[in-house]
Image (cartoon, rainbow, N blue to C red; front, side, top):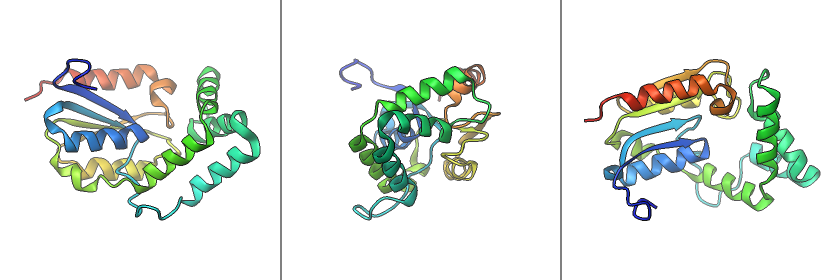
Amino acid sequence: MFEHCAVDRATVVGHSMGGIVSARFAGRHPERVERLVLSCTHWGGCRSKGSGLTDDYRERLQAFDRGGPREYGLARARAMLAPDAPADVFDLIAEIASRTSRDGVEAAARMINEADNRDLLTAFACPVSVFAGEVDPVVTRERTDELAAAIPGADLVTIAGAGHAPYLEKPAEYNAALGTFLSREVA
């Protein structure tokens, strides 16, 4: 993609599953990443390939099978957001989640469960900021704290009152934190 866009280096922002992918990319291609933001994410489930899904992902698939895409989307929005998330944010997250397919949910779950970025975290060659939603029920503070602690020099930014979609739940705060990180000089 970098070649297609004629970009040599870029700031990479990865959220949730995208954070797992972004961390992997930054670890494998440090020359391409100028800065890295890992938002509401962790280093992966570290399960062996083919070991099967965790209970929470099996439950998600069963819920999808029972209720179909629309009910799945509503359930995901309820499970992701802070209790006081704005109604329009809830509706947007529910609508986005309802567009997924069962196969997509299962493939994403397998990737998340089997990913293991722990060996890459100490080798990042760029500034890193880890963002956490204060009340994120999907990726707990324990997981984001562990991630930030494993990356030498990483900042940990907590978005107060936000769940798993702080960029929508608290956009001013999220964008301010992102702006602060992006305004720093890069060596």
